Amino acid sequence: MKLKESPESQARQDLEHLLRRIQSAPELENYFKTRETNINALITTYETLWTCFAPKTRVIAKPFMNMPQVLEVSTSPIPFNTPVESTLEMWAWCWDWNGKKMVRAYYRLRFDRFRGTKPINDLPFYPLDFDANKDDVCAEIRKRSEQYIKAVRVKPGASQMFTYVGNAYGDRRKVLASADEDDEVGHCHTQNVERLKWRTGKRRFETLH
Image (cartoon, rainbow, N blue to C red; front, side, top):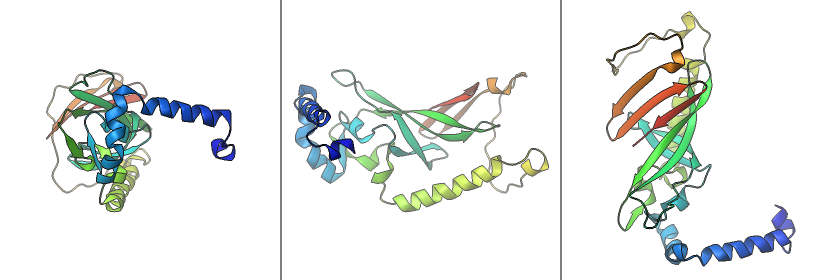
């Protein structure tokens, strides 16, 4: 806002100079040559997909039972090596229930190398704005989230008991008694997704491949 109000300010001039330096950087030369064409075609390359995932970008992912979920980008999948490594990682988060309160659940999302170009919404995780059915997806997720919150945020006791009709997954594992429930470690595997969950103190982390 201040830059718009003061177009001749030193801050604006410095920013314009910085942007020109970025555009002339050798490692970004090919990107800026094809940037406009790729944007109009809604496609990206492996080397430049990081430009689609700025921090705070809302993305679509399917971390559980192949159901769409909205996450917010925390760290972009920026390549730091030349040539670019075969896997790029991005961190994103959403709210989840830890048994006592809502906390941030962090996911490590991994992009495998691909050749040429690819439609942005064909990536395993992609920005919400690139979903052709964005409104319908948001409505579905909102409805499911409201049901989830209604189920978990209830008074302790009988109100926590619900009747469930449908299929369910069973997890057979050895359980070690512990005085602290937050030390529990669990593993869950679904198609194309490996999920490792652990809770330590107030923070909770997820890993997706």
